[in-house]
Amino acid sequence: MAEITLLEAVNQALAHELEADARVVLFGQDIGANGGVFRATDGLQQRFGTERVMDTPLAENMIAGIAVGMAVQGLRPVAEFQFMGFIYPGLDHILSHAARYRNRTRGRLSCPIVYRAPYGGGIHAPEHHSESTEAIFAHIPGLRVVVPSSPARAYGLLLAAIRDPDPVVFLEPKRIYRAVRQEVPDSGEALPLDRCFRLREGDDITLVAWGAALKETLQAADILAESGIEAEVIDPATLKPLDIHTIIDSLEKTGRCVVVHEAARFAGLGAEIATQINEYAFDLLKAPVQRVTGYDTVMPYYRLEDSYLPDCERITAAVRNTLDYPPGGAR
Image 1 (cartoon, rainbow, N blue to C red):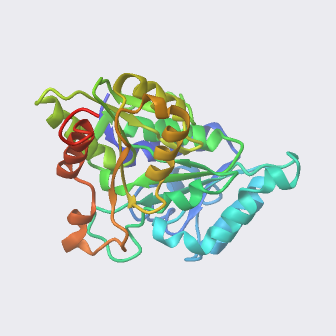
Image 2: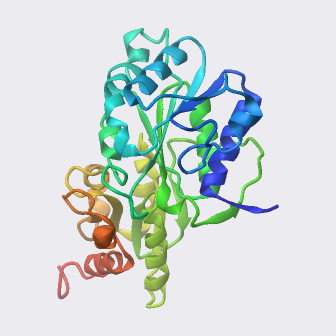
């Protein structure tokens, strides 16, 4: 079996659900004839036709709203926004309607929608093309927020998202679209939503990261291991609702935690994770939870992009500071 990229895994999952479920429809700007800006939907319109894979105008508000109408009438739409930075015109439909229909109709209607968007920096893109604003969507009751970090998880989580009866914001870290390859059987087997994935076992410290930031986090764990520090690495994958139980289970071994994310620091999801740890597992902590994040500024253009993104040096420094708490010796 050939190894495939995360991008190809997304395509494989979409094709599987189009084949398996006649209710599934795809639409978005340039996703049909051109196969999308990153070619995530390459070949799908030719295979399934223009009634199942549809090009739309450049109108994100319309894309978000049409998905709501389709979903409440029994379809399972998968709507693509070209970049996360272009999703904001559609926020009213996503936050005010898709997220609320189950509550608004007392469970009579739900919105089985997947809103897909490439997100994050690292590809030398211009302004609005490198957003990491997942915390906006995680704040909204009624929405799931899912971020895959490998081809296998992209395939399995996207299947689960399409089959879910409620709206899912599915954010694809474009920096690793083609950076990792794995064998991914087209088995149709979904991965569980709302569960963390433990990617590496360790007893000294817990590292929590998602999306493209996992690449540097795993590299940092390898570097730390060379000096005898064994880090446990956890990928939340579903950011909302958060599986805090797996993180706390890890803290029972390690007692220390560093959270890594690309998004800006203030009110990022790292703060939420740290707060939940303080609320539910304070007695397990041997040191305060630390965060390694983007900065509280607009993502810079490509010459400064690498300085903005969390790297191995910043992650390993945070780990060593956490292990050295309190500085200089005993409490």
